[in-house]
Length: 137
Image (cartoon, rainbow, N blue to C red; front, side, top):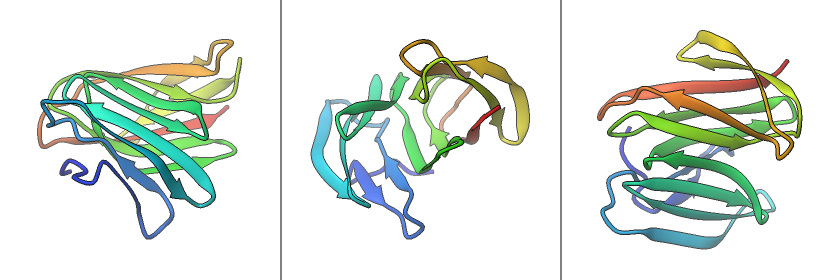
């Protein structure tokens, strides 16, 4: 998957694509509207962060490029790429359990903390995409 040159965009199915892990300097886009929500993205090679309506939604260290992020009341799904292994943190419901799959392989059931954050470590390399699905258990 290629980096998102415009930093954030809405896909034809209503999902969001964002981030550019290839940037050497920090870049951000604020006040991006999609489906009645306001997004803010900050991205570059060492970090990518997305906020929705002022609330934390996604962060990766180092930076990643994310396509087709789709939220439902049961969880979130997206495709991620990066140039090296990344720690991805997703904002979900507080103190809840979620089943996590990567490329269709179940990696386990995880529990969010009191702040609703769930952390997933992903093995990434340039030119390789990983499909992540996080579904409420």
